[in-house]
Length: 493
Image 1 (cartoon, rainbow, N blue to C red):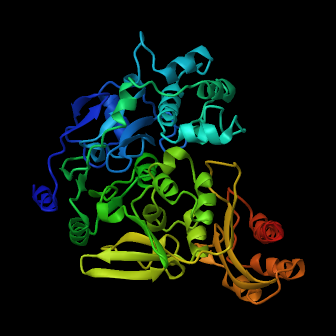
Image 2 (cartoon, rainbow, N blue to C red):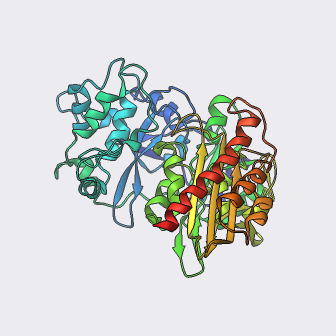
Image 3 (cartoon, rainbow, N blue to C red):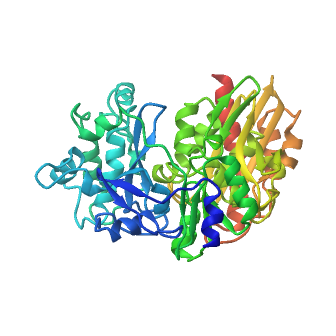
């Protein structure tokens, strides 16, 4: 076919197979519209379930082998209902069936069984896979030592309950599931999946698939990807597919060509110098969180509130910004950090301030032939920062209002303040009028109250199913007052 030969020019190979539970399974002509979940179930691996088809329930979670440095592997839980099966070509996947057997249960399966962690069982395979990813997480031993016992979100064994934040159970109840998680010991030295982490993860080879389920291409490098999207303006670019997967499943949207950029090395760097911190647009949020290790406090505050761990294991900053959603959680934070975006096309690169990037509802200055390659954060970072997400649930929810602050004080006066807003207009935006009012003003309760009244007028809050306009207005005012109270505590300390 003409499309096949055109796609093949961009470094693709045959679709090949996926290693599933330790044995290769041929993918066949899966195309770009077949999810990993549907493909697994078509191969008889029906432990993996579809519950919501949008990455919110976790019944579909599986383990994939991801790079953990150059010479190690990290077992990572993802939502198989969202990612294209073709994108897993040459990769390693473990489902609940591959963790243990009836006669030799995996430690996670055994603890779930003996502690009553399953009733109907529909959600159980997903819980088991997410729990297994945390079971093998290499930092868990250090977390166990650091917590010296446990708090309400961490067990005495270092188990982080956020690992299960994307898994929902409707009948068992969470206490026995938590008990199972907290009862897990360290993996045994002869555990095959634990031993697998000591070797490199499989490389992401270029892939080309053409079929009646849409074309799929993983280009060999960034140059090939840029040439392809320049030639095919109808292409859908995906990284973690946490947004596009929902469009496929629930809205039944289709694209003639899917271009995967999630494993392009040029989009996966994380570097820092005295002037900037550069984050590759295809790094997952979980990878950024680990690499930064709290060195950007405002991002560290964002990550636990961004969807669930399952979603953060796939979602990227490039994807969150590329969709242009006015309710994305990362834009307000990046606006407060005065981030800039590096945009690349086949004809060159350019740099755009994020404050100038959004032009309308889900619209931006990015051309169809351009990719976001880097999110650039300038240094020095502000001394006082905060991210306030107002939503109906504490975690794993879409925000009604999101506000990010970055403040520098000169004595008791505001030397510099940047405020990013989400959910209050057709685009994420900077609260420039409030910033101007506060700059040079005393950082006092009276001045902040006056500025809070101004902040409440920024944007054009709407009534919708998440919140009323009046509520959004009130939350904007409250957010600044709350930030003031927090900074006074920091200054006093």
